[in-house]
Figure: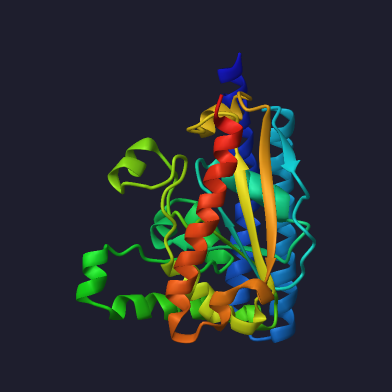
Length: 289
């Protein structure tokens, strides 16, 4: 019965995505060729409305078909209409559904810091292009060491993607782990955490450098499924009737790496490591028998 529920939920999510992707693509193409700034702004607002409608449709599916509910540990995210960065742990594709629902009406329009490979994924790539998500290449460490200019190229691409945030505030979603957590990946990178992969500092550092004084703060969200590892299929099947989410808002004035100058990358790395240690303890308190 639960697998049938998952099949139905997956079909409805696909139908919802198909319903909105066509008007979003057409509007994005129209904005691309439109010479009038006022009309481009109107098109952008229409696309933001379509995103809210699509996310609301997704939420109806996982709430009423899969039977999942969110329990906030402490307070839910504050209402923010200025530029902020959201960081979260990453275990399953369902993380995206949960975070979009949690933030869509509380923060400025969402953008995802995504891997460039997603541009070549059907439908997902269209969404990334249409909404102008900042894209990153994931270069191996030895390739970066041999060609440091690759990091500068990524930084310029992120800066171009975030240029509109100077006048049109947005919320940038970032999974610092860079990929979904699995036991195999954790073993391969010798993760010091029980439930997390080590956070990567590169994409986060580029975002911080681009936003600078326009950044009002960071939302740190921990997603706690009732078992680990979390699987998307089990989420759709309703095997996780309650997912806990913990949110902490850190205003810009408390972020030392914003004012660390040439040491900002090292200070940010230490800050992320400390946040990940806190997340691991939160997850351990929920998942340990």
